[in-house]
Length: 571
Image 1 (cartoon, rainbow, N blue to C red):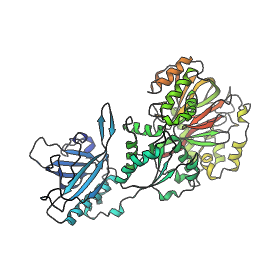
Image 2 (image 1 turned 90 degrees about the horizontal axis):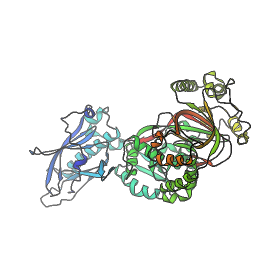
Image 3 (image 1 turned 60 degrees about the horizontal axis):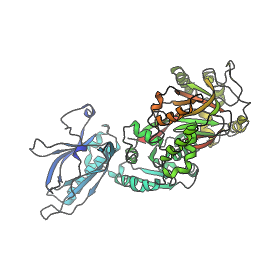
Image 4 (image 1 turned 45 degrees about the vertical axis):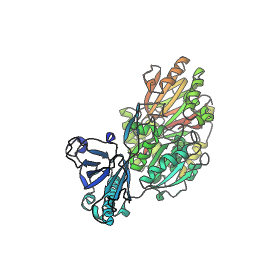
């Protein structure tokens, strides 16, 4: 018999008799006797109770110091049945073992991380092996059903008919996994094989792997794949691959249904902003190992909404998930590409060099603040859109003209004098390709003004030189970079970060250092503004934009919060 590997320090000492707030709705699903072996090969018997929230092991002993072992089902990923050979001649040959795999948070030195634990429970009654195996299978099915329901006490059939549960009726999950072997330190495929596959096997989840061969490979691949075959999509890379996946889903003809496909994110690149932001929001450890927590999000399969941002230039539109950057930070992200083999260290090295002689960028920035009034107007505008008004009616509706041209707007200058706007491609796309799959979601959901219109008087406009113009919608851009620490995954807000050109250069270095811990929000020379939409008109074609870590050519660009969300797998 295998020795039980229960970590008593990682388990709660709370008995079922003591009722806490988290246990008010706790119900016992199954109860039975099991035995384990301690380190001295001595049998220890337990009364094991499966509830909708935990697996509770109460030792059968008169010892008052005996402690109850409680394993939260949130940490359990699966179980299996093993037929063990007897270790001693005196042991029963009919023993059947139930192995439960779980990943609690334990303290390691100065921080915390999730580590693998396993508890092995044996049925060793003086009955046939077949009877013990039937009881073990009943427990396995009950644990799997309980895990699939996420602790909800709504399935009364589970408690009443445990003996007749059909394992074939359990929800099966088949994943489409995209791996970018060239991302970050080029360890994404190794991470998947060594850290992801073992957990998926323990949870009995199947998958199909697609390796990204080149830029935009996944973007093109996902437009033609048969999505109903898969339950979820998983990305093992940095933010750039998720950027391709989401934009590929929106380019499909069935984009309304495709964007509802839940996406799992496993950090495997240099910038893993979405993965780290999700772990931070859920209180997961990220310092020593963030991969295990991210895999547990996928296994648990619950949904976390993530708002999306539409970015429009004069001749293209894309969907952004984490950030839009221009200025010094964009230079750091883009110019460090040649050092991507160093991982996140490349940002520190490039940032040190850029901070010695930061460049200034001239342009005009207009934005709509995220006030209660503007949110109410936006909600009414979205309500009008949901009433199936067509695009032309939306453009002419007085209800939403707060985002459009206002003839009484005083002090605005025409955009047509800007050479970067001398393009009719964008208007041609709107007029001729509005029904094409690649642009349908943009024309039907966008409330932004066209490039021949001024923004309304509700918007504020700033013109001049800037060191940094950044728009962030996640709390972290990487492990050691927090541009907008106040951002939440689904707060429908763009956080605008500005560092003006009149600031002394030495303060730019201070800004970059403080940004590692998010303390730049306390700097008096840094503006952090919650907004709903923006328009940026560069006065010169200088540098480039960084959108979710990917390069975008410097040109006039505008963005807004989209009315639909992305579904991200979480715990």
